[in-house]
Image 1 (cartoon, helix red, strand yellow):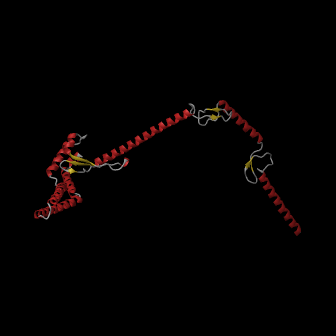
Image 2: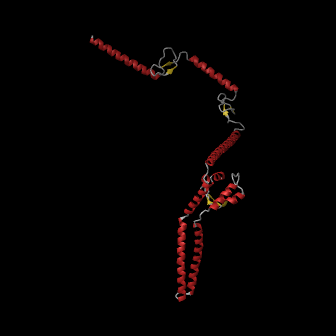
Image 3: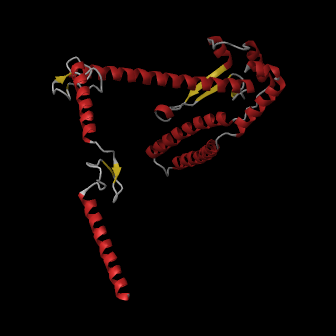
Length: 309
């Protein structure tokens, strides 16, 4: 920021004067209206107090009432005088002098490219810091901080292109770091959950990884070493393999004829003899009805042919 100001000191001074004038012109309208009302009320109180004194002197107003009303008007007048001074100071159009701007630029030059904020730097640069109440909750929580500098008041320094680029890079780095930390926390949380779940599972299975099962060959209970283990040991696994092989061999012996497709429904089936062409009783009934109907129509045709002869 200081390097940018020193590079174009004249333009910076013009920018300071322009900003100061904008601050002066943007004073709240409510304060101006309040000051007008206060002055008008003070004039009215002066007239009331003068009339009150005249009534007291002529004897038309008792002393007790005079003193009570006088105290009330005097207290109100004192409060309005104090408030008028405050509003006048707030609304006073103060122009930034060239000397003030030059003094501020001189201080900026003194602290060219600082690496940290020191107490001396803060005292020479900053007049006051106004911290507003926080707004929002959690992620949306925000708090406005106004900085008033010596000699020039409140001023927002326009960042350079390099500062904007550096701020963007820093924001991206912070975002990436937050995402990395989030993933790291999620990973640690998942690992902790897996450890707790594994410990609970081993405790529930009497110190074994998987729960007890029943062997599909011998029917004996056992603790498996894998999620797909079906047999209690190598002997049962081998015996099961032999039994399955024998079953396949017996089925192959029973099926002496190759697989065929049913003449009626087209479904594949294993015939029990060389002449079998139908897969089920239902298909046999259908085939019989078809043959019977064809035989009937053939006979009717033959009768008609003989009658014509």
